[in-house]
Image 1 (tube, rainbow, N blue to C red):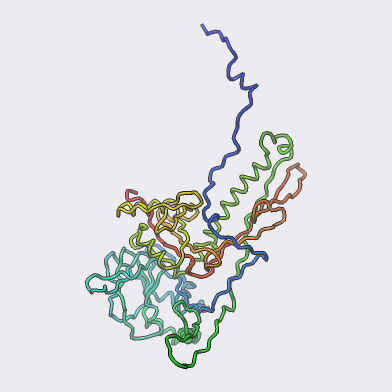
Image 2: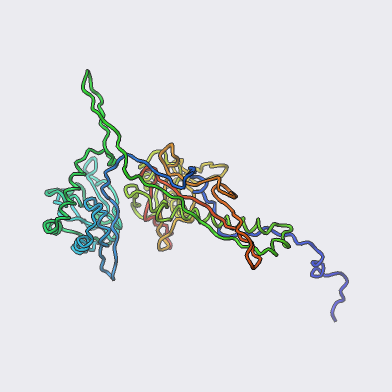
Length: 460
């Protein structure tokens, strides 16, 4: 026998009650430290020009490859990343030259070139990791001079000068493949091509120009002299075609039905809530573009001379020390959260426990007093390799700066506008939401990248 009800049920009572509710919640909102830490420069004309001293650029980029099964071939246009071929436009010759490279597979521990032996090949690393070793100070333990990995090349000096010998030993740290071009194959092609001979002559003239250690046109100075010695005359030359950055844009059209805006605005304003979430999505996309955009993104615009590889795969304190040592005034690291975890695993192995630093009231992990900010927009390739960035920022320090224009029509936030577009024939109100932005690296050493960072857990 069912028990007789003696009071009003909660289900019925809810019909007379006021519901307590939250504002709309959204996944995917990150801390966006890059947007917060970049100093923003006002770009009133929509274009930002970076003037620099004249530099005699001689390549040093990385070559690209195409793989068919186990066979690897160089993509011919990327040969212009060799210093000698910088700016060369003979595509047929580049294709023929790429075909003259031969593939060589190697195993971990294999010596690829020996210090003191003749340099007679240009070698390009297609896959794998190679250590360059020099003689230690006391002649007992070899010193690691550097790491070469995918796309790096060495021995290209043999293309313009005969009789050279290797001043280091190259030893494979992992198994992999490289592509080698014999000096004889290149000189044979030069003998048959007038355009290639002209390129070699042009490179020789460029190398002979007075340059400082950064490749800039030298400023003649006198120092340490006595008496009335005649002082050198000089001037500072500028780049004739400086780089210009145009502001990029992220936009969307927010649509709200007039019936919703008229009738359902209590206790929360529907337009404001829709706009708030839309702006969050735009800001997230803005930070993604600042990291990954091929035109102005930090990963694509880091100078090849400021890119280094990890010594062993996982990010170690030694790797971050090398990254810091290549620039002055580093303001912060930017890393994927998994990369930060991998770095502190390495610290734990060594018994190191770096102190956090306070940034605007937030306790942030750091290394050598430089804060390490998480950024999930940095890609993770293959699920286990990523990059770690370090930045010097600000115009006054010749660092990295964010670019934007404020004072826009219908500006809602600095650099972001919300413009009413009218009501269409379906009674839908439309708003154009736009934000304009870019980033510029003022001098190459303002931005460094640690590449091929292995973040897989040892048990993965």
